[in-house]
Image 1 (cartoon, one colour):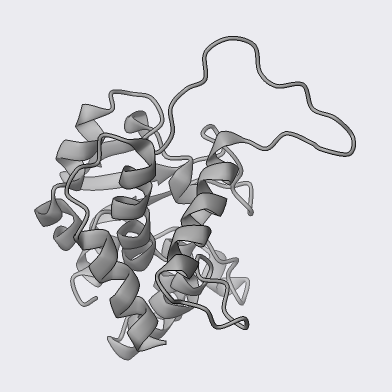
Image 2 (image 1 turned 135 degrees about the vertical axis):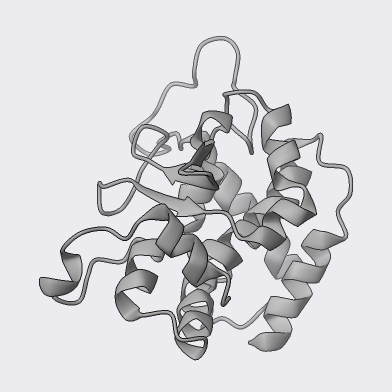
Length: 197
């Protein structure tokens, strides 16, 4: 599994030209998932308007306004300093307020058919990313390559002393207990925890 992580992140880091959405997805979504534990669809639906500064911290807003969020509740997750050093903020700013990882379609949308329903653009984007990862040689049939980032994040967080409650909030997992669900951590607290990552 560690080899798969290294293979995928190295291949993503090698992508230099992110003008095409397919390249941008490969370059940034894997790293964003690695540092947030977010569901891949939550990242592929990000818009420029969701990359903001809050309390002096650069963050992404994972919000149902952009698409589906499993819990139905949005959350704000600080960007790890390594993402910023890689140039993610510059990339996001270059996209304006719109989608970061796919182009907005012009004209009328495709008609959805009962036997062939249309998929949201961010869902298709997520599927194409999974195909790319499989093409890198990440072929374990027991591992869904895009979803594995959530498990990897939780393992690394636990290894570095990030509390379960903090880790649950960052990844968007429902709290394991009612007590853990009281009060979301502050953006500054999350940013401080992510420095351990």
